[in-house]
Structures are given as structure tokens and as C-alpha cells.
Length: 259
Image 1 (cartoon, rainbow, N blue to C red):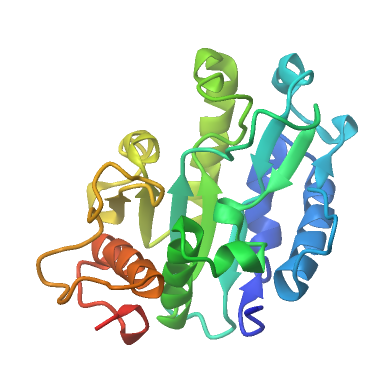
Image 2 (cartoon, rainbow, N blue to C red):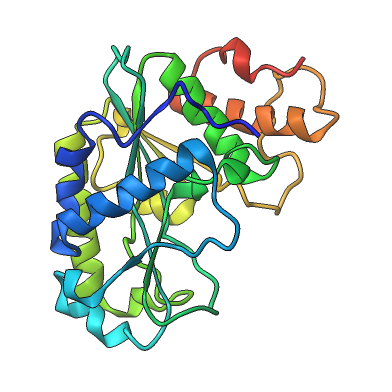
């Protein structure tokens, strides 16, 4: 298993940036959760592990209370970097912190495409392709801020019916964009892209199909990528290369080539 010892997880400006989440949750609680996730990022998830939880006393939004009888998901925004970052920051944004409809009636904390979990980061599904992209961006000299449009998951499609909480989530997102000041933003999926379109200038916003999309088998391939990928590792690189081209519109780095 690869543990990415050369990557910084929630270091540097993370403590400043995560204060954008204070409309929802207590900063010190989020910092404690981050410390635990950092340990698991480098050392793996222990057997029998349960997700971190944000207790009721650490909620700053009364709007969450109406959902406290159901499982609530929250993804802690993460800053992935190296000490040699020289080219500014990127912001990657997905739709929401998806959770199974089964689980405890509390706020459980995960991360963007499961980046705290080495098994997710390096698998051959969407998680692995996203992490390959993050690694390539960090190697190119960027820091990468990972977050969601909707900060909470309370059931599929449920939050869209709650205008007050939607406004609060988008207020938090706006604060993130303002403080992170990204050189470019990459939206994963239609919902994230549509939401960010009114918040980020066209020349800074790139959109990509969500990595779990299965509507067309070769959606991540372009006419100039060369031979079709023949195995899971090559498909993972091809997906990451697709996102790189959406973001930068340039030849992909060697680490994402599969020829």
C-alpha cells in the first residue's frame, strides 16, 4: 500500500482556510478531526475504524437540527501540498459528501473522494483517478484545495428542498473561493459545474464529467490520446489525464501517460 509520505495533508494555510466552515461547525473540532485524518492519511485506517463524528455541541448552524434524526454527511475540506509549491492554488469541487442511507444519526466526517484513505486514493475507480490528478498538480507546483458545493448530505436530493440551508452552504463555498483565491477551479459533475458557473470567472473555471459516470464507456478519452487503455491502471491514468486537459488544456505530464 502507498502512503504518500512526500505529500502534505492539511498543512500550511489549512488552518486559515478551514475557518470558512465556521458557519457550520466549530473550528477546534474540525482541527481535531483533521489531526486524526492526517494520521490515517499517512498510516492507513485501522481495523474496525469508525468515521469521525462532529458532536451536537460543535454545530454552529441551527438549520442542521431538523436532520438530526437521520445520517448526515460532511466532508472536511482538505489542502494537499508540498513545501515546494510555487504556482498558487487550485480548487477542486464536487457535488456533496455522499453517504449511504444507512448509518448512525449523527454528522459523520469524510473527505473529498476519500483522500484520507490510502485504499481509496490508490484504487482503480474514480477515487484513484482523482488522486492521480491531485498528485500531478502538486508535482507541477500547485497546492490543491478539495471541497464540495453542498457541505452536507442528508439523503439523496433532500437538501435541495431546504432553501435556507442551501444558502448557508453556498455562503461557505463563496467564502472558500474568496480566501483560497485559486488560480483555477475544476468542477466534477453537472451540479458542481452549474453552481460554480455564477461564482467563478469563465477563464478560471473548468468542468469535468464526474468520475463515477458510466453513461458512455470511453467518456474520458480524446482523439489524440493514442492507443485505448488496456487495463485498470491505464484507464485510471486516462481519466486523470482527461481532467488535466480540462483544467490546463495542454499536454499531460509523464505521470499521467499510459502509452
